[in-house]
Image (cartoon, rainbow, N blue to C red):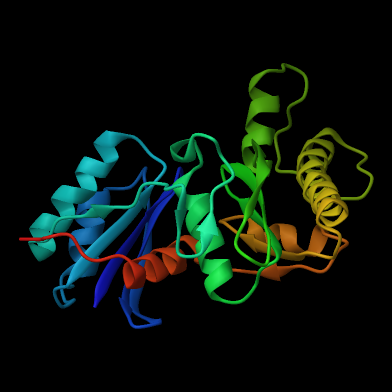
Length: 251
């Protein structure tokens, strides 16, 4: 049994894995009492043989998780850092560690599931886009603000582009709130479709489009190209990684 940790910008997701299945899972936002929430969630769980973590956050939050894991399970965390190559995936970056480990593990999960060649879109605080060939070569990708961050940035930098109510997504908006919401979500949609089209042109064939992240389900119906949800891709990539990499010594 393994405990898998996905430390994202907005929240922490975790899963207890037995082979290919989750026996328990949960999530907690960083603005909550993370340590207390995890202690409660993990109280009745058995002790995992390994704990693996993927992080795109700062060292202080990683340390917080290390303490939580040690208190609940008397285990240390094996932090996965982005390699040049692993689990059949080859990193396109000249400086491999510059690629977010979440993006790398999403590609690991897709390749292990037989979903390559593909375009992977992570829809969260940031929008991340990556292209993966059938033989596991990462072609590269793009990063942009996610739809909610885009809205926050626009509203924070303007005085008159504000409203007292939340907007809804429309093809053509007739009020400011809807115009802001629609513009940001449609901008993200257009970038995904353009990236997928460019990869198809570059790779010489249609690409499977996989969506993951907190806002993936909301974005799904806006896309005009075939798309699939690929939930928990970082956790699934961690599980594949654990099966291919020997464990470190743990107390």
